[in-house]
Length: 149
Image 1 (spheres, rainbow, N blue to C red):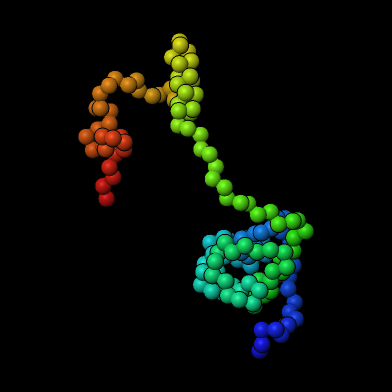
Image 2 (image 1 turned 180 degrees about the vertical axis):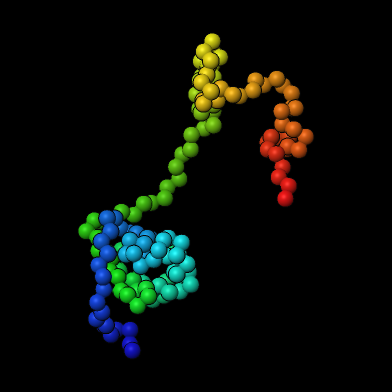
């Protein structure tokens, strides 16, 4: 069969609210699988075709009009919304000093005579300057305890 030949098949229409949508999500919406894990496994094992070609990428972007074949069924994605591509630009992260200033302001108000409620950090031990609270099995830099199996 040549690539230029067209084949007519019956396909179930899967309406989605935004495009692109990830392939495994289309299988979930179509109720072709029991869950996302099952969809991802079926895709990675080569049981899913997109527009006539086997697709192994679980997060393959699917657009309006794409045809998905799985388990002998055909699904066509229908979406009347425009494509909303998110361009990944570096996002400026806030400096670490800003949250610390906010936290220290909260601690000052708690130390100013008001006792903090038990559910909101009221059970913290005061810092005595000793490392005895860390314990001998803990990492001295991070304070995390080592786990033994």
